[in-house]
Image (spheres, rainbow, N blue to C red):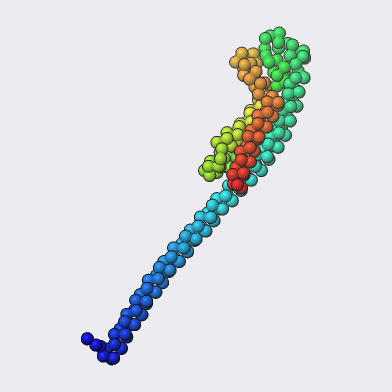
Length: 238
C-alpha cells in the first residue's frame, strides 16, 4: 500500500513530535536528578562544615582548659614553695632547742619529743603559725580553681585525666598538711604534754614538719601534671 504525500507529512510530524516529547521528558528527569544530586551535595558539605566547626570548637575548649590548668598549677606551685621555705625556718627553730636545759628537763621526765614541745612553748611560735596560716589563705582561690578545672577535665575526658585528678588532689593535700602544721604551732602550747597519747601525736606532727618531703611531693606532682598536659597538647596538634 502506498501512502499519500500528505499522510507521509503527518506521520513525519507525529514522529518528530513524539521525539521532542521524549527528549523533553528525558531533560526533565535529568534536571530532577541534577537538582537532587545538588541538594544532597549541599547537605553533605553543610554537615561536613558544621562537623569540622564543632570539632574545632571542641579542640579550642580543650586548649583553653589546658592553658588555664598550666597557669593555675604553676601559680599554685610558686605560692606553695614560698610557704615551704617558711617551714624550713620552723625546722631550724625546732632544732635549736634540741640540747637546751628545758629540753633536758623534759627528757629526764621521759616527755618526748622534748625539743618540739619546748619550741611550742616559745612566744614567737604562735606568731610563726599565724603568719604561715595567713599566707596559706592566699591559696584558697587557687585550690577552688584547681578543683573546678579537674571537674571540667573529667567531663571532657582528656587523655589521662585521672592522673591530673590525683596530682591536683595531692597538691591541695600538701597545702592542707601545711595548714595543719600552722594550726599546731598556734595551739600547741595548750596541750597536756604529760599525756602519752599527746606525745605520740606530737611525734607524728614532727614527722610532717619536713620541708624536704614537702618539696619532693610538690615537685613530683607538678611533673606529673605537666607531663599529662604536654601529652594532650601533642594529641590536639597532631
